[in-house]
Length: 384
Ligand code: HEM
Image 1 (cartoon, helix red, strand yellow):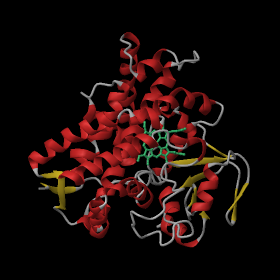
Image 2 (tube, rainbow, N blue to C red):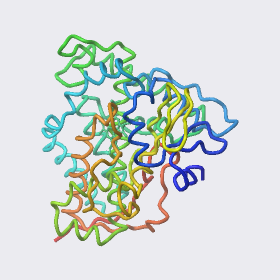
Image 3 (cartoon, rainbow, N blue to C red):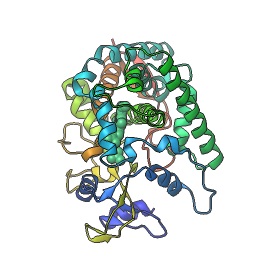
Image 4 (spheres, helix red, strand yellow):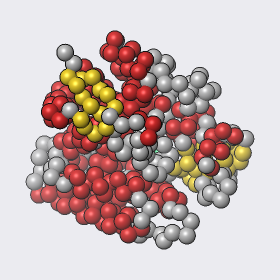
């Protein structure tokens, strides 16, 4: 309710009874994301977990080792860590993955076709990104389902302190094993490269490695799953848009950008702290305030995207905030776009997709950080 109140009434609000400022409009959201007075130190992740906790609930014992990622750092620490991983995720490097991403998608769709009725989250949207990121890092897939469960709990699916603590410990333990394994058995993969040394001789310490593996593995799959599932969901809800895309598949890259804008997979994960009093919109946000930027709300601002609540795969979407903005702009954006285009493109090429349950009553994941469907039950009928 506080979120809606903020979005409708003003640009920057401290919702009643809340402990964080909420930025809801495009212009202010974009300026916060590129203004160094809005800092991101590693306390951030911890504070977000605390904030998501209902009043009076016990404080979760949060595993700090997972929070020391570049996403929770300011320059120069952020600059150093980001530099070590940038080269693996450039558009050119990612383009080389296209044949493999198509192959994985083809085999997932083959399995789904054999069943006909499937949950598209389970059959395609979840397994594709996690398989790709595990292969990039050469991480074995045997604990994939455990990993999914821990990650879901940690990224806002639970308010139970004991559950959060157990998931954090299990995840940190698993990542420690992975790092040790890579140390003993280096390969020619990107993870081994990070464990050993980078080109300029910089090295990550054990804690940094665990946090980096956590960030890449979690960011690599918690988000793209929602790009794919949310995108297909809205095509099914808007048959005119689906028909347009079927008629002209060259619209696909633009459609993926509209999926990202219209139902942004990350909503309020973008937390910042003020290092001084800052004038923003029509208020002054005091020093040491916690500020949440709602990307989804910014992307639905009519002042930037006219008639923003209309889903239109041909509209201009330039400047949307789904991947953030500024120095923390999503490292995986080229990979997410590639996976989104291939998954949705191949799905529509091969099948007529029909929902098997009422689309309006499908469950969404709890919490405000991630915007994604729990499941998307559909029937897949091969096209003639
Ligand atoms: C950062 C969104 C996929 C890796 C971010 C941020 C957003 C975002 C909004 C910035 C957060 C902030 O400023 O606080 C998304 C969306 C995705 C996606 C919507 C899919 C549709 C991926 C993938 C990877 C990835 C596939 C690959 C590993 C990262 C990393 C950062 C990041 C490492 C931190 C960058 C930094 O701190 O400099 N992402 N992401 N993301 N993303 Fe993504």
